[in-house]
Length: 290
Length: 316
Image: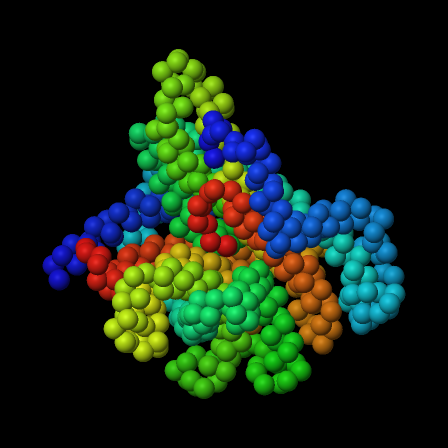
């Protein structure tokens, strides 16, 4: 994956990567679904047949041609609420993964590049954060900061950052011993230049793979927090929160079944895309799926 | 044997700095907050003089490092403080709650192994068959299912429509073992099937690798039956990654228990944590956090020990 590797058969590495990704059927399927979810989030006001917070029909109606996924406990259209809910889910996933990547990559770069006691201290700290069960740690942070969408994203970002730090650090350590980095050091390049120009571009590949697999964890965690009542404030539509209302009304299965299906399919899509990205790269990164 | 204890001691010693840092995180989480902690202790209506007295009594005017050391010493002597909400000692609360969570976790792991190991072996043995595809789809699906959703679907099907199993409640095992198992079955299935997916994946991958090794060919050549080759020569070596998965996922298991316990209203660690969060009961939150960290670190040591038991090539 080095930037200096000669492209075989005159095809750029990026293009070769994309071609290999395109042959991965599940990966393409996942990507298509994620694009659909993003479109739903952006176009929610035009796609959703009804306003998400307004009472539009009799409460607790089973799915019908008019209300595809039925209506909820006060008569709001569940399909419309799921479409609008994608905005919240994607926001939390986006902010938390981006935040985790920025915090984690910075720590990983510093630890790997500076080394010595700073490395030891930072990485032990990351170990300590990782020793907490992910959801329980996120729960504690939200509990202390107060329940909200922003705090859910922040909590997930903090809990997820050590994973990014570890990957970036190990990558930086192996790159530092490579010839082209040594050459840059010998030729008198500044630290900033070495980091930005020589290390960073070679770290991004694994970072993107890890980020897309983290998307699924972030989404499930956000939904779990909302389910437990620590995420979005009602009446805003959130998939996890909608399931928790459905929980008290078992006989009206559509209230929890459809929002759950939205979470399930989106998580599956993130996993497919992450797996495909990994298979398409030369990376032998073993991350598990959760 | 002496070597073994030496190994154990070294591993436990390596764990200490991480544990210490984790305790600092727990302390920092609940003490670096803006706001006057005397409001949590005395309530909204206390006067300024009372607050000042409380600050001196609880040492809240001391520098944070001193407060941390005092807090750590108290914990090491077994004093986790009193719950602000229930007035109970946090340690007593933990002792009452932990068995429920541990039972749930152990039953879930057992179920996950009972499903995951055979399924993974079958998928690897008949690679590319219909069975292999079914196993792959199931493992992908079970990993992507949020626990609380799976739990609700199970309740809708098995409690509501079929009426086979209760949807919530808890009876201690000692009082009524059968009723206990009946109540724990759906929570176990919820977590266990999700973990079975992870185990299937690992076993399949490991078996495929192991079955391509030379000694498997040798075993076949000398006339060992296919079952013996697969189980005795193959599976035994493929089990090592299974231990790794279980070890790495204890955290996820405890996190899952939090959610599942609140769906099935089981009085375990998870529901204690959720209750503590809603009542802003910081000592109880601290206790639950500390316990879960110790659990994860302890299991990571246990996994290292188990490696050595399963794999005779590993020496301490």
